[in-house]
Amino acid sequence: MLVNYLYFCPFNTGMDQVTARGKLKLRMACGVFFFISGFGYSSWASRIPSIQQQLHLNEGQLGAVLFALPIGLMLTIPITAKMLKHFSSRSIMLVGAITFNLLLCLPGFTAYVWQLVVLLFFFGSARNIFNLSVNAQAVSIQGFYDRSIMVTFHGIWSMAGFAGAAVGYLMVSFNVAPSYHLLFVGISMIIITLIFYPHAYYEKPVNKINRSVFTLPDKHLIKFSLICFASMACENTMYDWSGIYFQKVLHASKSAATAAFVIYMVSMTIGRFTGDKLVASAGIKKVLSFSGILILAGLLFSVLLPHNYTVYIGYAMVGMGVSCVVPLVFSMAGKSQSMNSGQALAAISTVGYLGFLIIPPAVGFIAQAAGLRWAFGIVAGFGALIIVMVSKLKPQTEAEVVQ
View 1 (spheres, helix red, strand yellow):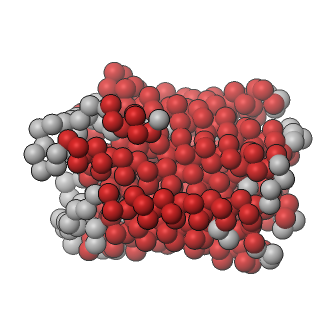
View 2 (cartoon, helix red, strand yellow):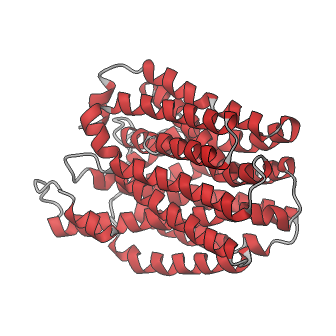
View 3 (cartoon, helix red, strand yellow):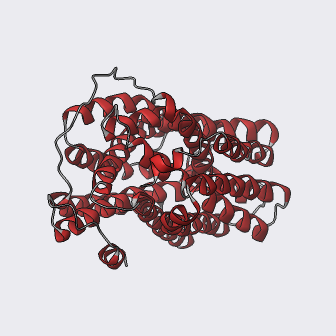
């Protein structure tokens, strides 16, 4: 399915540096690495409830433990930005992918909370190195095409996330321990990495301006960075807490909780595979505004009508809502005139990943004090933040993002 989709998508034949067949190979290889990232992270997320029970953690304790992952991610952003100034994103992607999947093998084997905390810190660091480098690859390959393909790459990530969640559902249903499940996934993804790495795109790093390692976005990117912040806050809250919400608020089974996460991932996948067409027909501002409405409405729907099927619907709305936001923000960041694509992505991620860092762990503390319904209700406010920030975007911004 993935190969067929990439093959039949039109490409710009006006680029003489790379042949049409060469561009297809580059796009396929990049898509595979997005798949590796999505499948691995979704596999971890699908087993969070199992590991919570394995280590006997309550919601507050789990929130504190999960805080280690985004801390590792955030602290590595400036390091990754510096690496992308001096080395090809292709080489950094290889290091990130192998490290990410090696660490993925280990969470199920942790016997003490401190072990999981240390592991998640380095897991977050590896995830940042992998994700920023693969997005830099995508931005470079986008330059060979005369239309947007960035959202589709993230669609592949979501498709992989759906597949990982589905496998996680089967593992939970058959009572397979998370140790064996994640070990198998990690080793499999490393093998795929080594197979497809030779086909990845190599470009010489270009350092347009010598900037500090701790780089903030250009002034005209700040509003998009805040939109990215809000979307990442909601997206990672769903990864970490959607299954637990089902178990704690709805008192549903493990299988029902995992099914809810699958529904969320499916809706995100559909949104990302249709996102490029929506942007072409409606414009980026309308797409981003509608995304905020879906996030706000979906979370409120889940909070105000706490029943299995209504929450399923709410999760689907949130999945559609977050689907296009980050890819479009990253696409625009990669076109910065003052930084290379890797530096620009790192800069905008500095703001965006604060949502990833702060909000999901905070959900645990709020849930411990007031309940998960209150916590989800507060997170819904980030959908409103997206709506407000999009309304402040200038009309010409769309022309800058979508060519």
